[in-house]
Amino acid sequence: MNKEIELSKEQKSEDKILIAKILDKIKFVENKNRFEETDFLDLREQEIVKETVGKRKYHGYNLLGGYKDAERKIAIIYPENIDEDYIKEKILKQYLNVINVTLPNELKNKYEHRNYLGGLMKLGIKREKIGDILVRDDGADIIVKKEISNYIELNLLGLTRFQKAKINIKEINELIYIKKEKEYVKINIPSMRLDCIVGELAKCSRNDANKYLREERIFVNFKEELRASKIIKEGDYITIRGKGRFKIDKILGNTKSGRINVQIEK
Image (cartoon, rainbow, N blue to C red; front, side, top):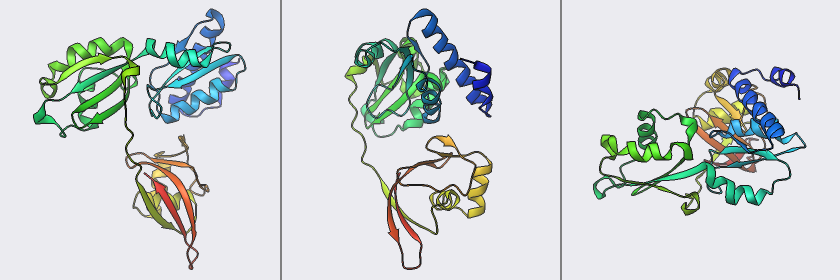
């Protein structure tokens, strides 16, 4: 494995840093025959892990976030001969916990995702130590690295907004999450070019859509994309930083004028 050659393929410095960390973890797995795990990764970072680890024959890896549809996940890298079910059932509990927050009656339905994340940030916790935050009407389940769960339990009550809440640590297998219903919208576009779709999704002009591309705010299938002319297909994901993430659910067909009707999953 030539680390220098591998890193030279990547242009962005943050990608180089992540790849270097992954390559170091692979080396530990090779030399020590042990498990290695990362902090929580966003969807783009998960794709980098898949590319970096997945092409090597003698390593296994798994991306785990605590429940089936988790968005933020840790990567566990291990020798190839380890059973994958063992990873999911046994090893996961060694790395993750759930912080269960139950709000008092007067605060029900008043806290959003940003309230919980903001509270954790005030405790000096880095974002990469925090997984998904699953908000309920009466509180939230916050998936975190096990190493910081006790710190959160002890200190979150010190913040004014959480002083009346009940906070306790749960095992990951106690997490029950009901996924929200999917939301769909329909758009009408002149072509399947990326800039056309971004303009419609972001409700902006074609010029502004191209500006988002130049500002590196657009991702297709969780990878940064700079080409306005890239043709988007059914099933592709488009992320617009500051606007949200969208999936091309169905191409519904053409209108009489030749424009294309597309169903989008938000």
